[in-house]
Length: 493
Ligand SMILES: O=c1ccn([C@@H]2O[C@H](COP(=O)(O)O)[C@@H](O)[C@H]2O)c(=O)[nH]1
Image 1 (cartoon, rainbow, N blue to C red):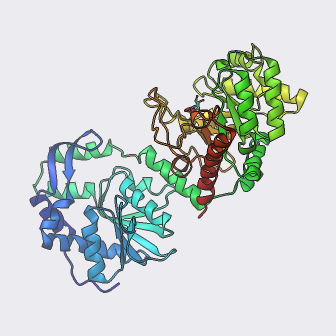
Image 2: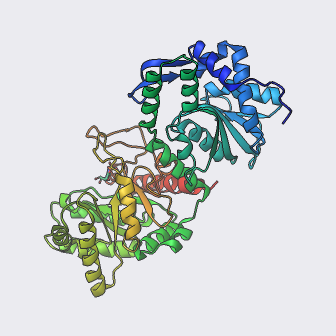
């Protein structure tokens, strides 16, 4: 880095920011909806070139502490700062677009770079750290290395600590802390002691978290960088049924589960026969079948054996342990006798899981059948009331029971542990985006590549073709199979 002879005291920059109204005191509604007694808007300084230059030079001593090949400004405010620093000190720059272009090269990252180049992120200020993280994710997805970021102001609301998290690991350097800036403005008589205390108290009690959606994206990125084949994942599984499922997925080159939401036994058996060669799992809702009998259950089991797929009853257990034991083993359906996999909500607490574990063990002792349970971490329906932290609770429950919990019914990645499977319903090819009763659809590619699905669950997209010709049924199911499987395989590139 060339020597910088441009030395300007940082507090003179702060004073001028205050005079140019880039630091405002009053009552301001933030993007999050909360009211803040202070507002910092560094966008305005593009109209004050001298101030812009003096502010940019504050980054220089910190840049000397970092190792990098390229710099990248967080769009949009810091783009101007990064551009100045790039041209002034001859540091090559890359530019991240906020939106992907719909035409031309469709690049999200502009400029010339090579995988393995180290990129220093330049940002104007940090609150939660989300904007830096978004930029870092794009850079990392392009194979670039991001270890450091420099901000002009640290708002001291937790952002620097958020980015130190081991999954993110970005060291953020700041030119000035918010409290230093406020103290200076108070000492110089620009704001009163009362205002200064009010603002400092507000900052201290308003920690900013990184939104859950961004955390999910992070989990996906971490995952794609450590992509594992289904065979490898089978080896990591402690649960025999989970292991068998991953093996089946690798062997049949399929990550497709058909949801047999049909109301008569004959249609379900026909579906199982036709779909069998292409699927790894058939899912039932046994309580919608008008003519259920244990004879049907036995015939379905035979088909599952012949075509090598797993039977999953989507029962969504959600009661106290003792009731769930009876629901699983008894009643008209005697699920424990013919299903491999069932699923449960977490709402009733660990007693439910313990109840199923006891039943599984008692049964497996008699028939040595492999059994497993999925936890519901999300629902696909619009307006569902599943709380945001449900997924984290599901993960905590899963790691306590890895021999028994196979994975999750999810809409985003719950965890990066490759031993747990993520199964995603609400998948359909075509124009239907919903079913007018709350179901929300996405494509196989979106489910796998953006929502973290390892396996896709398809109902009406497949069963609607059951009365078409066998050829048409098969063409359609093969399309789902190929698109779902290729989407997973393509993740490794
Ligand atoms: O969040 C959830 C959980 C379960 N399902 C079940 O999956 C199938 C989806 O059927 P489509 O015809 O593909 O809509 C159905 O059995 C649901 O009960 C879900 O959709 N969403």
